[in-house]
Amino acid sequence: MVGILQKTILHIDMDAFFAAVEVHDHPELKGLPVVIGSPPDKRGVVSTCSYEARKFGIHSAMPSRTAFQRCPKAVFLPPNMKRYHEVSQQIMEIFRRFTPLVEPLSCDEAFLDVTGARYLFGDGPTIAKKIKEAVKKETGLTCSVGVAPNMFLAKIASELDKPDGLTLVPFSEKEIPAFLAPLPIKRMWGAGKKTQAILEAHRIRTLGDLQTADPAKLAAWIGESSAASFRRLALGVDGRELETESEEKSISNEITFDIDERNAAVVEAALLDLADKVGGRLRCAGFYATTAQIKVRWTDFSTITRQRRLDPPCCDDITLRETALELLRKEGLHSPVRLIGFGVSNLRETADAPQLDLFQALEKTTSTRREQLSRVVDRIREKFGRASIQRGSKL
Image (tube, rainbow, N blue to C red):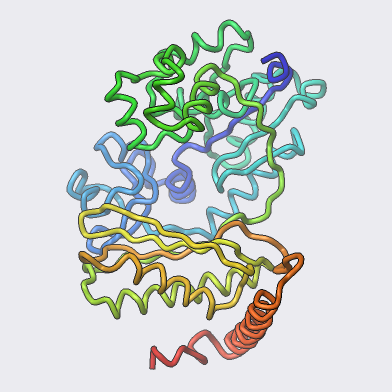
């Protein structure tokens, strides 16, 4: 525990980022319930919303139609990702003025290790205040900051006083468990709804309950790995280091149908289009994928993901399409589909695999030819437009 107390970590989370950027750019929206996402007359979900909209119970991932029902006077705006990306870059540059050790988690939040920066800018809370002031002055936006001796504690702290908050976690080894004890179990990293339900069924409702839970029983309920990790975090122990590399770790695309789709051919065609888009982004970024995954949301909003390892790693459209269809057909369409998605992860810069046997070498040759073909298609589309060359199945 002593080692982690030597560090000072900040977690900075922009407040209602997309909505805040829109309100900043369009002052007439100030004070209004602003919803960023699909319009209420289309099938889609809320990306984020202003705090004024949250008073009506609107939240991210909620169907836009439901959001409209809760607040008919809400202002619905489509996402302007180009603008949000510009502001995000501006914010990250502000962070890097105080420390080079920045790990962006998304366009609107990041971890900062300011341990060494204390000698230049003051203690953790002082640095946090200076960053908040700089962000406000240069972007007009507010952010909430957690100051703590490790990443887990900083993440929790930033969520406790939003918007425009600054929360300092105790740096005393004895005081940290007491700080965490009253927090609800949903604050635990990695505890999804199913895990929360299991824990609450056994009267584990707070992090304090986790601290005192019987290790053997906890392992029986949620598995040994999760039990050990949860107990460590519940006591405030987190020895992870920031990952400052900015490389993309996954690439994905998804689409929500205007009407729940029953036709398997239509769903498969949409999935193939998504695989093509992901393949193009993958090659553009210069990566090869080692894992492919589909995402299916059914008409009742239940959602499943299925994945498969890609061996050898690839970036070509043909392999990605085949894998996507294989995963979908194995699952089967047992009810209408609301959303379909495809993505790749575990990206690497090379497709090479050591000590290939004969069959692997043949697969490697096939993969290389498919990659070459996909890159030719990329060049044609870049020169003549995406519609200039299409799959035969679309004609």
